[in-house]
Length: 184
Image 1 (cartoon, rainbow, N blue to C red):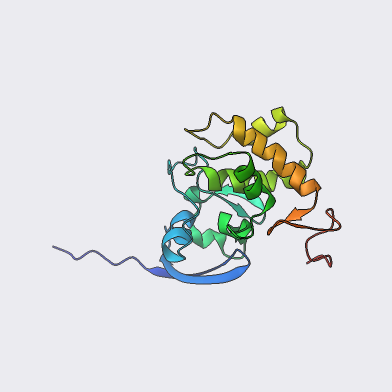
Image 2 (cartoon, rainbow, N blue to C red):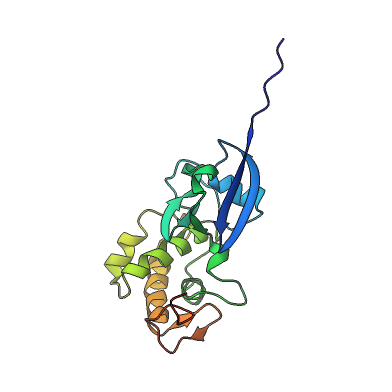
């Protein structure tokens, strides 16, 4: 009987939440597994493993992507932002704060996917209607809330962003200017 050939490991370096991160992984390692198991960033959840539910959504170069459908090696030379990169419990970003204020979560399993999706969507849609918010979240599934409070959360997040709220609840004096003010 022949011994199985060990799978070759590849060096992967990905900028995750503005920090270059490195690991040696099999070529078939999914980005979701790379984030959760290799980097210990467990905010990205894996639900359906088919790209349908949206729980694994992260931002790749600012655009929502299903991390359960993407190999970690394909994320090299890209910026990946997980829910951990959008704020902390002590310094919530405007979308996280809105979900908390509006009770946009119950069990919380789907919340990271909603937060990343909504964060990216509000960049291009700063003043949404409720119908537009419903459409924006239509690719993410939630089994607990019935979506009303999630829609309210999207609208509230837009308000907070318009007020200039940045992670930590601080109000930016020039909300249309990038945080840092110098384009950074």
